[in-house]
Length: 586
Ligand code: AMP
Image (cartoon, rainbow, N blue to C red; front, side, top):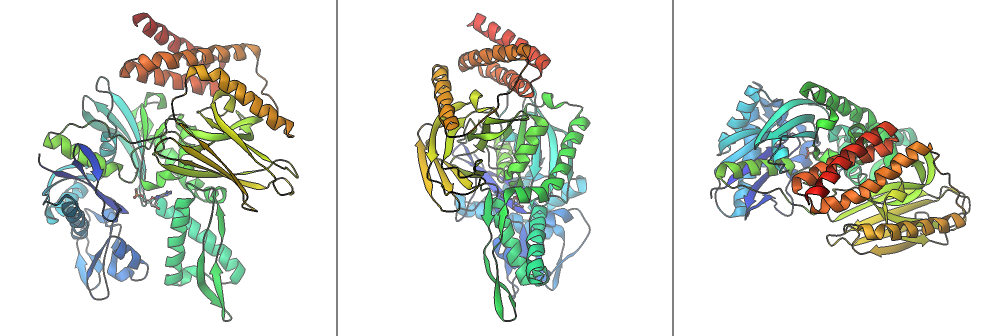
């Protein structure tokens, strides 16, 4: 079978993937699949592509070309050193580098490729991309849309039409597309975006934030010197990425400046919350595009089957939170968002070559894992608040941490009850373990406790709680943290949970119960009984029925969350009908 490469030629990064031994694989060299889309000439006129070119960009911009994808289709000449190049030529250098990488990894020559482009690219831009591929020595067997490629990594239901919302936030661009898949045909129904919005803008906001504070303190603007600016920019990008997994990070750039002969170091600490305030306006813009694309496609959110996240910047937790709030849907980011488009292009290449593949399988956590704490549950302060740490559908292994603080002056211990589940009230989730971090320092409330979850491929979860001020820590290891929870354990878990909270209460915590009207309480109790039963029916249902059950179950859960009596009743009826029908035919 001939090999057809899948190429994601991106504004910031590019990736090449291929089907090998029946699996889709992004090709890596030295463990790295990403090739920065940067081309340059070094001081001796030697060609640099990828990281070496990216490294010299801030220092020698006149010899370096970044983001050439933005210029595709334009009749311009781009200056690099003493020479001028058409955008296609620079793109061809990147594509040829990918082709050579593939040939080195595979060990044989490859001639064909499927190349992806944004859905909004016009014919001229597509043609320029095709020319670049040809200049790189490739036969471009197809140009496909990026959201289409992303959709191909998620094998859908063959029986009925499915609609996907693909939210793609990369380094330099953002777009959202509504894609329909029917009988193997993928069609982009609507696409919206901003070609000047992405993770790079987040870096710039963070750079300004850090440099403004440094200038205020030392009266030196680090942005003025290209070398310092480049150092800070790299440091903030790294910090930004870490903030996706850690609640607070420290930047450490020594000898960044000098004042009256005394060296100055840059050592700020950034809290995730502080960073989120900076990027919130940009993310709000993306949400407007989401609405616009739905309305262009003439669809409501509930007509969307899946939401797929693409692009490195979608790892930002705030993106997940805002999208979940707006769409109330499970977000799919199982396939690495950086590699998803190239992998989808490889799937398309495989289909052209006659290889039919199943879905791309990845190990993920099927449930959200987190801890119980004092916080808001459906708008009311409660001691039963579920604080997610590892979201469901996160690829394994995964490490995430969150910061909490004590709520009483002189609090001696922190209770860490661990749960899996999706409800904001821990009483509706499953308790999987608990422990105490004791002998805390005698300080006023607000003592910071960092809780870290390390989940490995075998489903073993290590939970570590650390008092930040002293480094004092306690650890708990939970085996089978992601195994499917069985109904027979539910009561036992509830009892364990109740007693865990009673013990916590005895340690000086007070809580308030949510007051609900009796009819609503009854409707919720009925719905919860049905949900428990549904789990058993789903376990033996056909894949199509299981999907329908999942959809109705999600609807019912979100109606419960919204405390909407009418919606709970309607969703309960719909789910009950299906469950009774399936029980009948069994
Ligand atoms: P892409 O163009 O899809 O390769 O996305 C690149 C962008 O994603 C860059 O701005 C990266 O800094 C950003 N990015 C990569 N990893 C993360 C992460 N863990 N958290 C936040 N942003 C990230």
